[in-house]
Length: 276
Image (cartoon, rainbow, N blue to C red):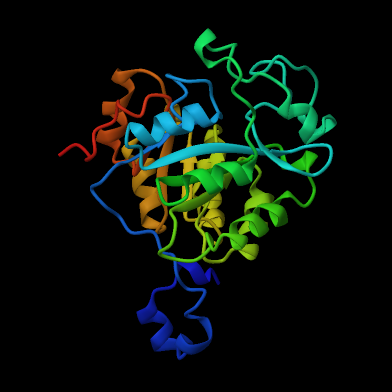
């Protein structure tokens, strides 16, 4: 039983309101509003997964910033997309093979443009502390098979800041690793969970039924999105956010399909409401 999906009315009818209401706090609700998610921050305008990119997303009034979380050699949580340092910093090698101190010495901005020289790889806690209350945060756990226990560390960081509580901060946790999201559902029953996929085989009726037992969002590649899929997801009381929009002409088909959110490098592209 997915307690998050149960309404107060259904709990009352079952006589469970007293014991379960504190955890029965999130249920996806359909809206004509389209959530705009700044992918890795406003990654079209600033170096991805840096404080500069996240601030740009906030300045552009994104509903959420999307961040990627990994773990250092000494067990600290950092915000970076790739499992290696090579593409977005002047370092090299795996994130998991470097300490936080080593990673903090790297330049994570110069590759994008000279004016961003000196941007650092932020810690998860720094991003939470800076942007909580300013925008929603869509937290993606990357390559969790490299980082046993990362779900617990993310949980602790959110709980320390009371960011796991309903009606407090807009927080969603997502991953391509489905077992990891099952863990997050258990650890944070009040926080919505999303499953990411780029595979059509993950969008069968059987898989969607399985996702609905623990997830509140199914977030597929935009190439997989059509109105039929959106309806299938909505029928199971889940939301759907599509990724990753990098061209203006990619927006309208997603609006026409009825998605609930658009994950984009350019948060100024999507309009606020779905197409009529």
